[in-house]
Amino acid sequence: MKFKIVLLSVIGVLLLGTLVYNIFFENVQYVGDLYVSVPVANNDLSKYAVVRESNIKYVSVYKDFAEENNLIMDSNLIIDKYLAGDKEESSYFYLDDLLVNIYDSLEYETLYNLAVPTEYQNIIYNYSYVDIWIDGVMDGLIVSAPLVSNVKILYYRNNETVLTEKARVTDIILDVPLDVNNALANIENNTEYNIYPVVKSSKDIADIEINDIIYAIS
Image 1 (cartoon, rainbow, N blue to C red):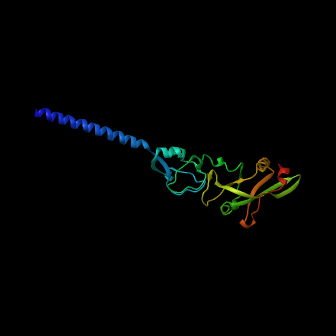
Image 2 (tube, rainbow, N blue to C red):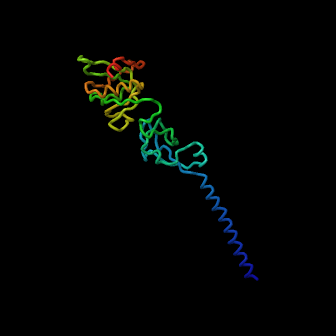
Image 3 (cartoon, one colour):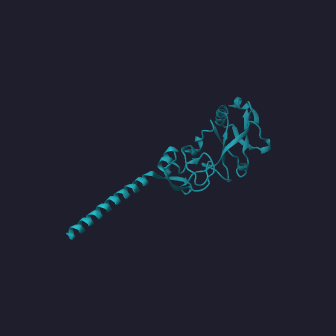
């Protein structure tokens, strides 16, 4: 009789233990399903900076929160991409934060790439605007004149790298109207002309000015 009581007690304990374990395990699984790991900024990042793996850390957030707010959950979508704006440490990443390529900026219709003369390459980072000048020969006459004045510099580059701090700048990317962009591209194809930037003092900045000679030459 005692044996049966002991046996039943053991069976009861085992059943109770199994039930408790199953309930606990299911709850652990359920709680685990509520959270996802998402990448966030590991440090403050500047606009147009390239996001590296070292610039990312991970935090756990509610899955519903991540999905409802369209947080990026796959770090492969972030690494080696350009930032469209400044980002503070520990802030989340969104698709709108990123530019696959620096030329993908939706803020500007046209981007004009212009080589920087050697004498400006170490100082041009101190300037935000330039004039675009042309030298060459037109109808047998020597031409030296500004094509476009007060043009904003959008990006500074060293070969293929967009610079986010002072460094030697080999070319700059400018914001110009579409018709000016097309005219400049046509002039570039003529080897008799040389197009180059002239730096502007901040006190001289005014609205962009287009010299009609640009359309005559192009």
